[in-house]
Image 1 (spheres, rainbow, N blue to C red):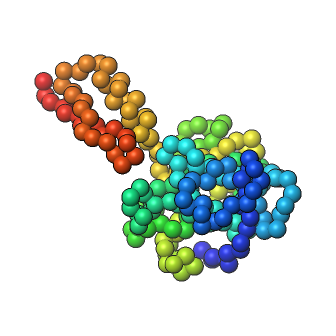
Image 2 (spheres, rainbow, N blue to C red):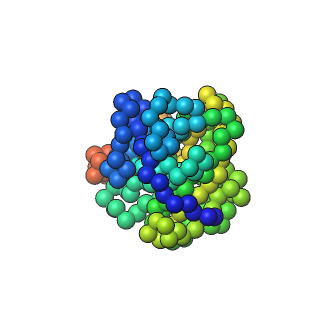
Length: 216
C-alpha cells in the first residue's frame, strides 16, 4: 500500500475547540478529538471525524490527518512496558454517509501478527451492537519506513449511517469490570468446588484474583 507524506494538522478538542499537541496526546487517550483538514478553522462538518478512547479498555493516543480519506493512528504502550504496543480500542463519530477511510495503526511493536494470517479487527456501531470482523481483504500488515520501520496495520472501511457511533478494536474486548462481575456471579452461587481469594493488587490498584477449582 502506498504511503503518503504526513501533513501537520490541527487536532481539536470538540468540547473546547482548542488545538492539541500531537506528541503530548500520547500521554493519555484521545477524548472526543475532532480531526479536521490543515488550516480549517470553521465549525465542525459531517465527515470531520471525532475520535474517542476515554473509556475502560480504550487505547488511542494520537490521530494524524493525512487526507480526507486517510488517518494515521498512534496507540499507547502497555502500563509499565513502553516497548509493547499492540492493543487498540476506540470509537469514531460525526461520520458522513458513504464516507470511505483508511486507518493506519502506525506504531505496532510486534514483528509477527495474526493479521498476517487472515485475522482482522472487529467493529460494531450504535445500530449494530454485535461485534463483527472486518473483511480480511481490507486489512494489511506491513513494515513501514515512514514510521521508524515500525509495523503498520492498515484497514479500509466505509461508514454507512451518519447517526451511528462506530467502535473499532484489535479483537473482542473483555474488560476488567466484566471479569469482576462474572467472578462475583460465580461467588453468589456458592459452588463447592470453587474458591476465590485476593492474591494482591495491580500497579493500578486493581484486585488480582486467585481461583482454586477442585473436583469436589
